[in-house]
Image (cartoon, rainbow, N blue to C red; front, top):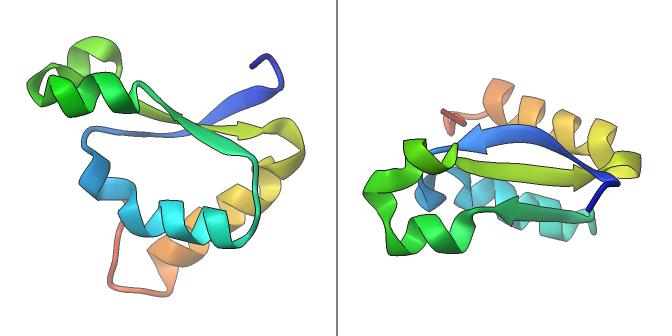
Length: 79
């Protein structure tokens, strides 16, 4: 996992559902760290540091572009 870097942090899985779909469509290498733990203990999200979107270093620019497009060109916002 040393080739993966944190691009965004979320509190709840519902905040990144659309983003996850867009990343999968683009065939990017990514993982949501702490996703399972927070789905079991949702009120402990801040204690775990949130759900971290980890993206492979070669895909970071494309992932950031997808996040920016999602924030800027739509009414769906990543919180």
